[in-house]
Length: 406
Ligand SMILES: *[C@@H]1O[C@H](CO)[C@@H](O)[C@H](O)[C@H]1NC(C)=O
Ligand SMILES: *[C@@H]1O[C@H](CO)[C@@H](O)[C@H](O)[C@H]1NC(C)=O
Ligand SMILES: *[C@@H]1O[C@H](CO)[C@@H](O)[C@H](O)[C@H]1NC(C)=O
Image 1 (cartoon, protein in one colour):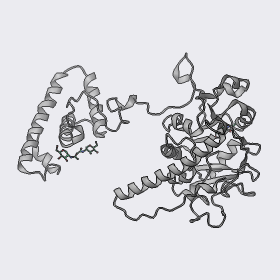
Image 2 (cartoon, rainbow, N blue to C red):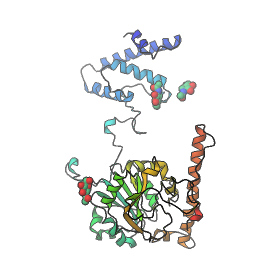
Image 3 (cartoon, rainbow, N blue to C red):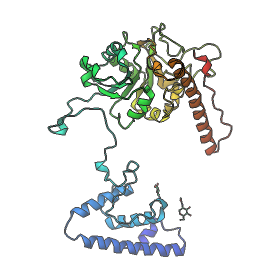
Image 4 (cartoon, rainbow, N blue to C red):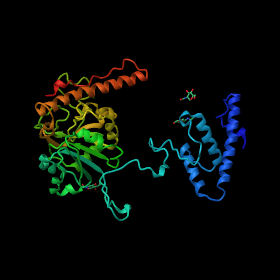
């Protein structure tokens, strides 16, 4: 082994003499070590075969073949890097730092970091379980009282969709009267909200196979909506986050942006009442959809899931922050006018509250959550800009005060 050769590689060139000495010792130890390994497994090849890929993966180096040098590198990296300090230098021990956090001790090829909602058989060959894999996911947060409405909505989604129902009233078997219920996934946790379920059960790694995710309320009129046609338009207009246009007769129609515009396929901006939009490219005039019937691309959802707060279960204010997940938001967020819905506004889960008038308590919490979410986002941004040394960052005051909501 020629030390000069290592010197010419430049890695060791700038070292001080005593460090150089240490390096030489390291190299010698490495050679002895490598020799020892070679001697330990003279004939049996399996351990050796395992050894090379694991170390290569460790170094992110696909170019195997010079195993002694590889071992030297491992030792050198381990010495230089504090994060690896204290770990045994046993090359048979697997540690792949590029693995998902916590799974570093597994060989990468066995790691299944993503999942799906595809039901499987209990028998036969696993590879033959799935003859068809739905590409899209639609979730409804439902109570049995809304069954007829939900039934109509589900029927607007083709077989290309996995159907997932979140039950907030504990009634699940009753839904089997509908033919589609048998192929749906049912998750039942009493008295929780859509965003509570979404945070717990729709982790981006769990729903990774689905290209688009519809996270819908139960009180939507879908007479003029078809999901396959909707997806065609979303793809055509490259919308990462979208919703169907709301019929002007919808209950509680608040924003111009989400109102259906006739004769259009899609719109990405709208005009609000004077003074409501400080910037035309920001909510509520653009880069904005509401939380009742949003549709996310897989990539956008990976970000949005992280934005959802565990304790702010109503999701109020989330719609104003969605834009932080896509770039440029005013082009990638839009409303599909050609496939539109009616918001029926049935206050179902709202009646599940506790306290005085149940409805009132829920409403109050919604508004408080909105304020809290807004504060958290602003503080997080301030903290970030401070940490990178940017002062006086103008935080666009694109938030609308709660009193504008009736
Ligand atoms: C130290 O470890 C980090 C990650 O844990 C890695 O990015 C870095 O390249 C390592 N440093 C050296 C000198 O290998
Ligand atoms: C590595 O460890 C040394 C002493 O053990 C310490 O002075 C140095 O700050 C550490 N470096 C990092 C990046 O943690
Ligand atoms: C499902 O998706 C495939 C591929 O995009 C398409 O050809 C088919 O028409 C879709 N099914 C329905 C019922 O629309």
